[in-house]
Length: 254
Length: 254
DNA sequence: GTATGTGAACGGGTTCACAGCA
DNA sequence: TGCTGTGAACCCGTTCACATAC
Image (tube, rainbow over all chains, first blue to last red; front, side, top):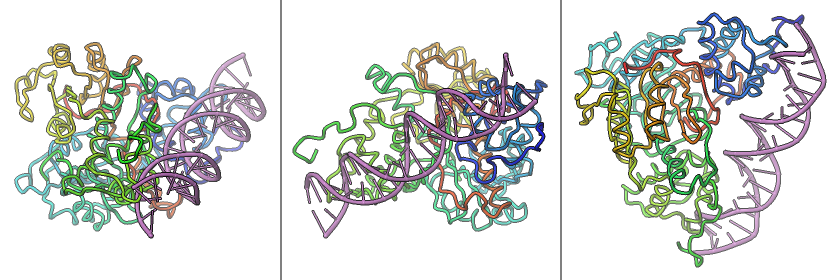
């Protein structure tokens, strides 16, 4: 709003670039912090600094959403929080199940960032009978046998896999069969999924290996590749990764 | 080796593309699996399938390392494992410290993928005195006061931060002051680091938000943006992210 | 014949720089 | 005047397709 012609879709018509989508949560976090400090408006410059990107990129990103700023003034914080939340689909409730409640699964269950963003841990699942009934983050762990029922009854469409690599594909198959269409995979394995299922992967050892690469350069060749690198974030990458499963051990017992 | 002119640097001269570096660990994992099955050689096609990329990309990636294949035959598995390991700097020992031993820190300490790739957990550090001395993954937790000493005595250059967001920057500053030049950050905060320090960030809630975005599209607009997305991996992204700290709660007590 | 290695075409994303609007 | 919104230039990475070598 603001201008005469009410906020129109602008470029919004179809498809926000993937790179932009990956940054929206960053902006949202920065905006939320501003909102909590009751800051009414921000300039692209300020917000960009807070989110760690440059202002041109931020403005371009926002232009894909529509014209939500006011020239000469900046952006309305609350309004933007709402718009980005809506765009990301965070205005609705997303029940998620976490499968594999070892240290990592427990960490995820306790992670405040989930609840604060429209994500609700609908269930914790583990294959170990000894875990059944044990409360983690206030939620009793359920046995794997319950997986399909839990997914169906809660209308879960997002599943988190934090099992060992060896169990991941099987868990994935069951989640998908039960109706899950988005998976966040922490197991160091590539998952085979049917068309229409979206998988994102977080691989701890890969991150460390990338750091080691750069670290080696620093020590060895006097910054051979060209000195300092910009701060890097785990983000989208479009390699359709696959990989032979069961290569390296995973975090916890299934 | 293979050809007359011994394996020369090829394009290797300077700088392997960041995107390629991010995929090397993937190839390495696939190759390690093949190696364990005693497979002597692989074609780019086979290896690409195992690593989940297309063969052209894989060949291009390898071309940056040098000419390690044999036309008409493929790549020698063992040889490639060695070359990639060397390129990534995994032939040397990388002592790492993990700061913040909550569920996530413990998960990381127990993560087999670290040890199996030249990474050695030199120390576990936590601010909670109650944790001091408690063994996690067989390593006694040390108090934060020991941080500087531990880093110096072990020549640690890579630090992992798994503290709550509020403590992350301070921990980061101390790590850097003590000599750490690469940081893997799990706290949902952007870290300010001096030039020359490399930071990679893993943010769980951002991954979920990106999934939610796509999930919303599936349900709402009949695959508005264009249907099925390729499997996505956390990887390099070059947004220099920053962000106001202390927005969302983190995984465990410092 | 077969599979690698790579120049060239292509495409997406970032940056620039300025027009447009409050 | 000040800051947003955006076309255009630029850069990096992916894909194509074929020459090259075994």
